[in-house]
Structures are given as C-alpha cells and as structure tokens.
Image (cartoon, rainbow over all chains, first blue to last red):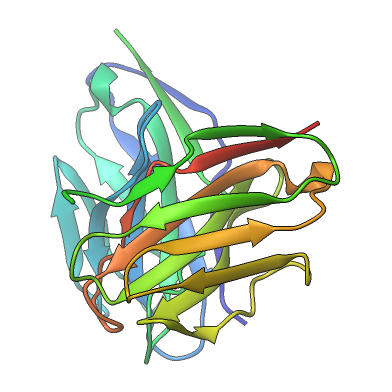
Length: 113
Length: 114
C-alpha cells in the first residue's frame, strides 16, 4: 500500500540554522510528492511539489528532490527564520488519479531568534 | 470565492447529536475532498467528489458519516450520533479538476464532542 513516513518532531532550531526534515514513502508506481505547511491558526498550504523522479521542488527558500532510488523527498532550507515556525507535512498522491493525498504525521518546527 | 471556505470554524456538540459541516470550494473547482486531522491519527482522507458524485468514499470511518455535494459546488459532511472519537479538525480541499496536481485546503472545522 501507499504510506509516508516523516521524522518526528518537534524540531527546534535557532534562526539561520540549516533545516532538514526527512520524508520517505512507499508507493506503487510513480506517485507525485508534496510538502504542505500549516502555520499557526491557518489552513494547510502547498509549499512545493515534484511530479517525477529527480524533479526538485522549491519555494520560499525550501527545496526537496524526488529520489526514486531512496524513495525519499527530504525538505531542506539553508537558513531558517522565525516565521518558518509551523507544522510541515509530507504527502504523496498515487499515480493515475485524483488528489487522494496520503500524508505523513507532520513535523513541528520551532525557530527561535 | 477567493479560497475554500468552511463553516462553522468551531463546533461543540453533545455526544449522540448529529452535526453538519459545510464546505464551499473555490469557484470552478470540480474536485472536492474531505480529510480529517485528529490527534494520533494524522491527516486521513475521507471522501472525494468529482462534480456531484463520489467515486471514492473509502475513507469514511463508519456508516454514521455521510457527505453530499450539490450543484457541483457546496458540500456537506454529516456525522450522525456523534461519538467522542469523532472529535477532530475536518478539512475540505478542492482542485480545478480530477488530475490537477494541487489541492487547496480550507481552514477546517474543529469539532469537539463532549
């Protein structure tokens, strides 16, 4: 079946630190991969996506590369800001259909000045 | 509207009562989804609508849960005889069409069953 595993939080960093949030997946075929972010008091927002192997999604300084050989889609940012504090969800969409997204458990990031 | 709108934003209900949660998708979006976000369960898919039909209801947890969509727009998720384990945030999302790579989420309805 399809599943997503992401690192447990919370992750606590100082401002300007390097961020990695690990995400691995199990899927049949070639899924699309996503990172969603949920800021405090707000709804889920799409942060970035990749639809095929070796694609790199990027947005707001965040990046993630679709690695089929390691079935991973790790989220990285070179220098985090306090405003990046949020919960980050890795998700996959199985091939061939609609947005029946399979989500990871979420990783809470807290960035301190 | 500009985004996916859900109402109410918060709902407290007594165990055993029925509740209705409403989702107003982005205008023109044909695909609509309901998800549930609960402690210990993460985010889980409930049901998918394409237009007014629901080709995938596989995530509905029991027959107390039902949903409908009318006019290819507004959707209502109904929970009958609510139980405490139904307490969660219910999220609605829409996308332009079935195969669109991006789904836009509403802010959710926080349901608390007491």
